[in-house]
Image 1 (cartoon, rainbow, N blue to C red):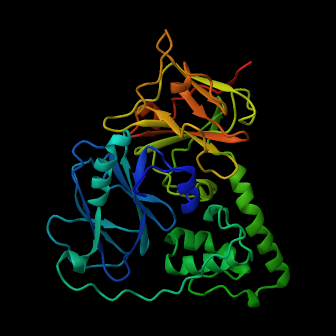
Image 2: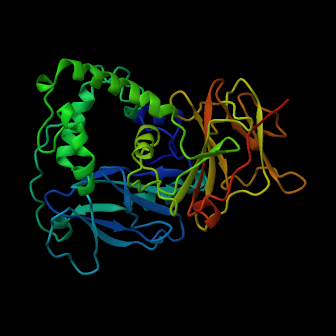
Amino acid sequence: MENTSTPELAEKAGYVLPNLSVIYGFGFLDLRQEPVVLSLPDSNGLYYMVETVDMWTNAFAYPAGAEAGYKGGRVAYVAPGWHGELPPGVKRIDSPTPWVLIQPRVHLPQQSGLEAARKVLAEIKPQTLSEYLGNAAQPAPTNNYAVPNLINPKLPVSTLDFKDPLQFWEIMSAVINENPPPKDEIAAVLPMFAPLGIELGKQWDRTKVNPIVLKAMSRAAVDVPEILATLPIGQPVNGWFIPSATMGVYGTDYSLRAYVARNGLTANTPEEAVYLQAVLDGADQPLNGTKQYTMTFKQPPSFNEPAFRALRMFDATNYYPVPNPINRYVLGSDYPDMKKNADGSLTIYLQSKNPGKDKEANWLPTPTGPFMLILGTYAPGKALIDGTYVPPPAVIVK
């Protein structure tokens, strides 16, 4: 996504909760034939990260970011069981699964910085090991994947609104067989799916499952995504949910992993980025654009240069940015024109209508219905990582 996101671009891509202060890269790497070498640029002080997740959405590597830095280099993603040699100067990263997803994010401080951000993104270059060495690439394996047949293609794919709910289980079976879960989950969790006909090494066959069980599986495929859409995440304080320390690397926190996959795929680890989510106001009532709110920060969350923080607005019915007359979907450290109060605090106006020219610089437009806020901070300070920082609540304007 070589441009800032908009409501239209988010809907076209089916990408929920996009970060509107970055441009994105997004791609899958198939490591089954051979390793993939990723060349990373020196960004000359521009913040960027390369999140790497396995097919169970664990963020297991960041070859660029808060910990690795922004000077660049070369890494090679290696599939389980590969025992070959890598060229000098190429750092090995062992992947837990044969496929990985990489998602670079390059900071876009302001619109004038778009070309610099695009340059960094373009220089993040994946190559098979053969190509990197100047040899012919190995033949790509053949694939025959089911195409999700959805009721409403305009909704994000993660809503899982299949015309045939049982297609979810067919796709799930194929995914498990191509990218097996961790060994401890194969031993402890996967056997619980055997009564449903879900087994490692076998493609699920609905004709071999009891019709009563099939009916229950259909219902689960319809109901569970809706449950996940409203499931609380983290500890609620001031209307915000403070995320778990297991964010990004979930271990046995399966409900959190499922929530993130449904509502905001590829969440980062706290050391790289912290996202605080608000769907309630300070009185624990759902945020709704039929009302007007203020949010006053006495102290904004800290971050380590050259990173940033951003308060993002989303429509709570589809998780896309909110169309508005000033095309503003975020406020944060990239907006120096925001006006501070006399005591140095900062008040944000959350409402659907323009609060007036004197307050417009601090206006984050809402939809006319339910909305949610994401406060994202990249390369965050310690208080965000350990969960002790809590943002102020949204307060209804009387």
